Image 1: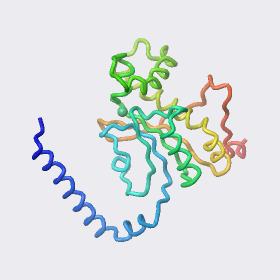
Image 2: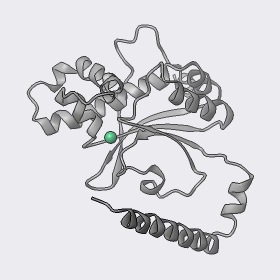
Image 3: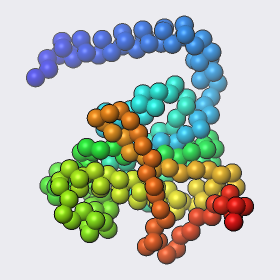
Image 4: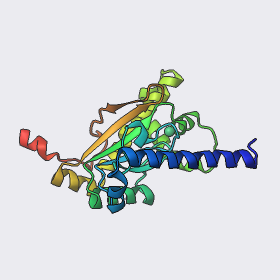
Length: 219
Ligand SMILES: [Zn+2]
């Protein structure tokens, strides 16, 4: 158990590290903090998991100001979630990001909890979104080992969240008007690497089509 003094040690140490980082960064990149003080113009919106092992700015080797972020457990974008929808609208309409990346990660505790059917309290309501993805892809998960099921559900969940982003009217408009791109990625905690997922259009989505103006030019 942590005592009060070890807590103070931890926070004191973190504050020290923060000051050292600020000093070091200002020395190596003197223009950074003055530029950030003027505003932000990130090109990327990142939807990721809250997991402490997937800090997007660190794993993408980016600087402050380069990625606009929304993270929650299991990187979900429920159509009724005001928080993630507000981030999406602001990033697309105001910041005019060029890329939206939905990034899941293997070994996701939220996805594993949804697979395990354990009662965890309030979070069960949140994880309903993952359980719905699991139900949709049930046939593809049958016969796999628990690890394979978890990895596959992580990937299917990313695909479904990408589709959820693509159903958004602001996103559809930005795709048509200025070529906004939406991507599905998975992060591998064991290697530190991200890879892109193929996210085909949803055959079950009767109401939604995304027009890609560049494709029309090529046709
Ligand atoms: Zn996770």
